[in-house]
Length: 487
Image 1 (tube, rainbow, N blue to C red):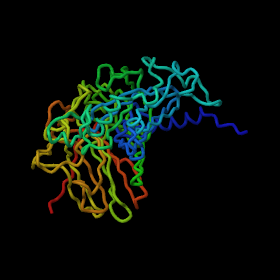
Image 2: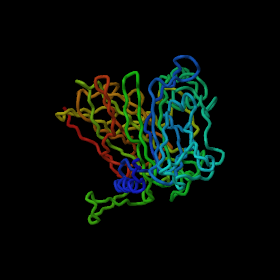
Image 3: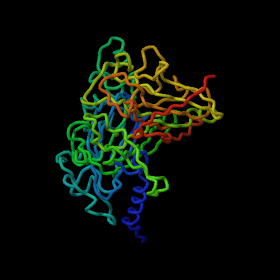
Image 4: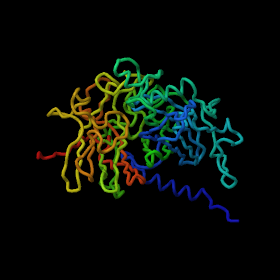
């Protein structure tokens, strides 16, 4: 019999290499204190009429993993595409644990991940911590406030709770069932999401924070973030994960790492050291921070979360010819609206003109697409001849990425370059704001963090997804644009 290789040494080497690769201020796949699933789609339809979703349509799955031998507590929050928090819950992870979440099971059957800490699972029947060769008591443990919480019962979300998340994420009135398009016509109804026309597809995003105790608080509520990592959420860079978007009807699937957002206590200070790419200590420079953190818009906007912000400008290829059917983008954006209350609803309908949140629709500073001969065209948005404004004025050209998270196909709407192959420059800073209660980041108050991934499909059978190239980060007080000579 061949015994397995001892785990302690090999894992230590892997984790050391991962930690060395981390680069705070530039999003990379390293263990982090917060994970972002930037976009999800879930078909919650009931094709056979039995009162439950069938989970045979588009779906999103993701995993949360523990990179440490120490146990971890992960605090999950679901957000609508209007950035309304709809549900939060905790998940326990033993050392080196992995928990997979099938969002269709959450939305249609009310299932949350079933895990249990040491105090509620002394026999390790629910959350074991290793087999006969790796059983290690230090990989298990308990956290304050978790008594009588774990394990969740199967189908724990029922009735009002299940209706609320389905309606909020599929564009229906909350908590009623009237569709958002009908409500837009008569001016009635309150919604938490803008998935119009309302239908069977639930959309939104998910955040996962490393936590020190069980809680039902949302980000921004008192005590959730306390400077130094002493709140409900801590500053331990311990979590990692990946996600998959599956669309069986269109033979489409894509996957990539979750967005890994590291915590650093220096992020809400005045300077951040920038290490020379060679690793040398000589020639080190400092750069002024913008005061921007990932959760920076949550009241009070004091940077106590210590999370690195995301990018502001991006580069991505597009392929729309020959064997390639199309390219699409999943885009997460920060509206910068200060959040003081999480249970919010807005007039139902397509965002804009008094419908939806005050910030919607969001504008972009610049979207420029090139072909492979460097011919350029500017797409999306509205320019008044002096500055780019947000929200755009009624009746002007609509923006390409108007809400906090969405999937957008090249060749549809304004995201339609007149070339089959090339690349696009995306400056997703919202520009001059046009609403109150926003948080101004940067010297001009015009920065807005974002995240972009691209998916390419070919021959109706193949697909691949990857993160777009981050050109600038919200720690940098820059808002670069490309000058295009008139024809």
